[in-house]
Length: 91
Image (cartoon, rainbow, N blue to C red; front, side, top):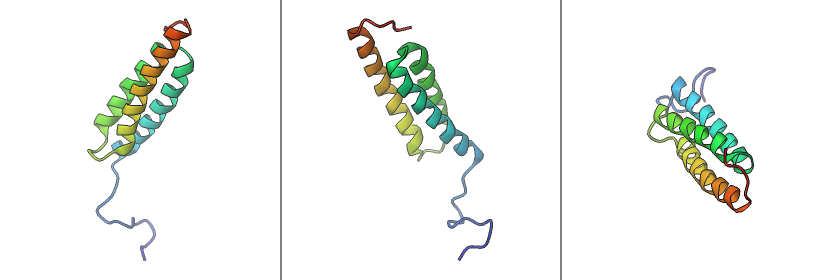
């Protein structure tokens, strides 16, 4: 049993920067998914920059940061493709 205030894994405490990186990654994923249907360059490029910053902030084993970078990149590709095919403005 663990006492109150202790984690189950004694050596696996998260740093505050990893927590912030997780929140930034979640924000980047949400903004890039919105950007697919509304102004891809205006939303997805800053979201990709935020995802890359979050990837640098987190530890080397951050799966959410990696997923955010991949999702932003895929959304950028599909957002630009949809905008060009549908003759929507990119900016």
